[in-house]
Length: 112
Image (tube, rainbow, N blue to C red):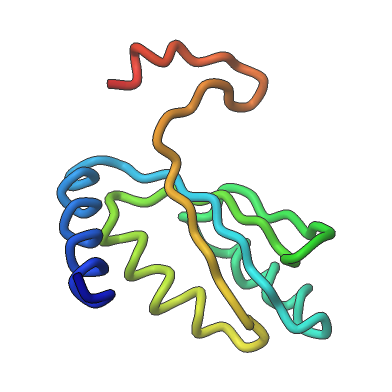
């Protein structure tokens, strides 16, 4: 199967899974070091962004965000995040299940 077909199938499955469901996302962002404060400030202005962390390691910023659904997350990343000056790379991960958040354990069975 071609890479394009695999990507199309992935989009179809993920979009149908998250259709009508909120999506929490952890986003790692590589930023031009001279622009990191500006990028962090811009991201912090968005209502979708819960947390922005400057970190050490292979990336510069880790962002926690919430979106209406998968399509909303995808549009946000493509139209708003990647268009900010200074951003070199963006990788996102969708949260499947939350077991503990903000010091509170969450009953995984109630997440269904």
